[in-house]
Image (spheres, rainbow, N blue to C red):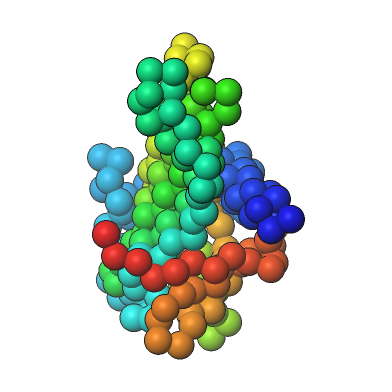
Length: 189
């Protein structure tokens, strides 16, 4: 039952990361360097030290797959959500999903970067992506593979609530679509 819940939560996170809708449109001209890189943060746009760092939520399946030649093809199921918050008010977000079924491997990778504005009083922040990328790999249908930049209409602001655990070991993120939230552990890589 727990694995089913985790899989459903992961699909919700993936759909939220790939959704076209959002709360507000993003003005790419504001604070943007114009080359698709992370924006130049406004002076004084900093985030609290307790939130700075890399935070990861991830699961994987203990089942492994090998193809008919004996080559290892990966775990049956993997999923991860990673946020990296920088002290200068920028962030990066990674969403990774993969599955192996009937010897076919499917992988989806989403990446966004932009600015983050924190409201410490109510423990919330607004992320504003300024660029992103979608990649998809389908071993049994390679003509369906994708690798494209996010369109302007896909770069939407999102508001999240946060709670940092004592000792900065984990952070719990939640939003309107997932009020129970998800716990991301502090990592380094």
